[in-house]
Image (cartoon, rainbow, N blue to C red; front, side, top):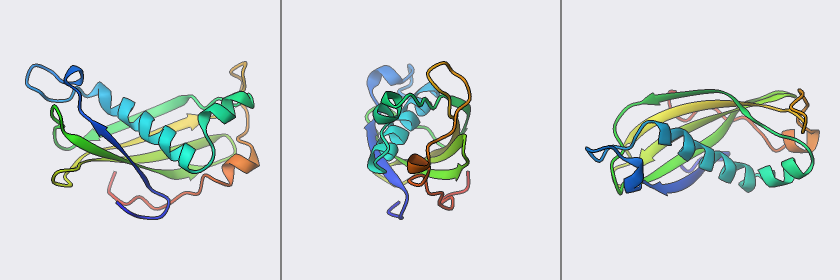
Length: 142
């Protein structure tokens, strides 16, 4: 996916992430999404490290993954990430996990993150960060 507002992170399925059949365990998809989201935020100029240094935390409060086909040991994957929705306190990201070799869509996912301060009290996403979180239309059916 080479569309404006969408970034792609490449990951390779490691042996430790697979079961006895060489299929990637479902729990790793959210880890790959986290990597893609972190890379996406960095590309937007809004790194998590910077936000945390400013006292803003964005914990995941909701996650959903839809599995379509299996990722297997040593598959190179593109994990595409984009902003779906943003509000003063919440940001929702979309993801599409594709196998590089054949561009097959393996999974889609959605995560929502809520802004909190260092005391884990509800906070607002600062305007200068929220301005960078421009929602784009979902490029795939989630």
